Length: 463
Image (cartoon, rainbow, N blue to C red; front, top):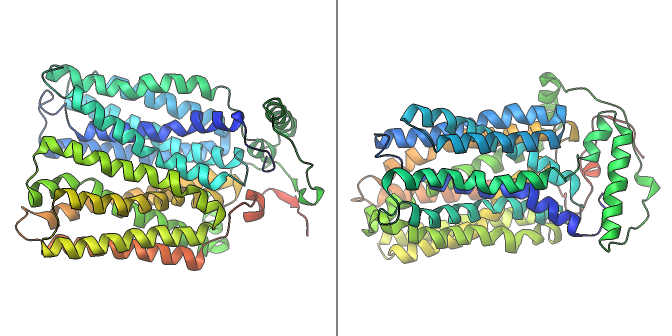
């Protein structure tokens, strides 16, 4: 798999599996605009609770479906989790009351949370090592394409001159499911991971899958190079890994890798939740923008987040993981610190504040996307989905308090001191995350997954 040249087959994986992050960004942006608030008689706190319930659902889905992905296979889970999201999101659009909405928002979150674990595993196991970093990072960054799409949709769907109040927001909930229907069709033609098949005693299926993939690559013009026999390993079928063994792997066998994964996920989640969920409050309370105009400020913010992974992703394969993680985390922190100084001095306006956010998160977005790549590469194949789910859940939990903290620091906009401290705090946290990755990280660029981390099922590896 790692020696294959890039062909249309790999593009089908990128499109079929990578669209999940577009859906996640779309979902959060549509719900964040709270078009349903008036019709469902919800307070501001209850609107916030709807977002929290969705995030809690993501955590539950990641943990539950992450384990099932390691046990039952990547393909079954990335089809099941997308189906759960499609149904739950569409039904939520029919909500007659707040509690109905809460219930199905939780299950929509579960579907997307499960996607994070199953999809990252499948991508890393199917994409050649030469391209794995840029592909994984770019796909994770497309979240912001979905967020921009949701923001653009809200300009029309929540405009009372175009749609009545009880119709526009409901249509918004159906955008993701309609787009997702086409993706389910594409996913049916994506093969199961041969790596997963081999470690579960299904050697004939693995061989047939690889033969089929190689045949598709050759028909699409790719030239196959011989496999180096020195890379051969022997594996045995492995049952579901017990939690006790997983804990041993994380904290005894690979403690430094666990530190890196946890630090990267927690730091990027904290910064993103702190800024993303409060940027509108900053613009309104300190710069006097109207609530309706914040959508326009969001577009360049989302664009910077989208372009970062797309333009910088290949450098993670060329310059290396540790160096690029340090640079992206570090530069984003430095830019945010500079903006904090200017914010405190009162020299920024709404436009220049947004420009600083765009520059900072151009780098932060690539770094945050690399966090998912990192935790999916540096742990054994047999627990890959579970490792992703645990670190994802940890990051979500750690970042959950950031919007509340920064909301308190913003206050009524009369004092810039508390938020200035908050910006320095976020900047420092990101810089620390970059340093930890630089010191304790793994040079995983252009290496096969098996050379980065020995599978648990290996019984005869080359010396």
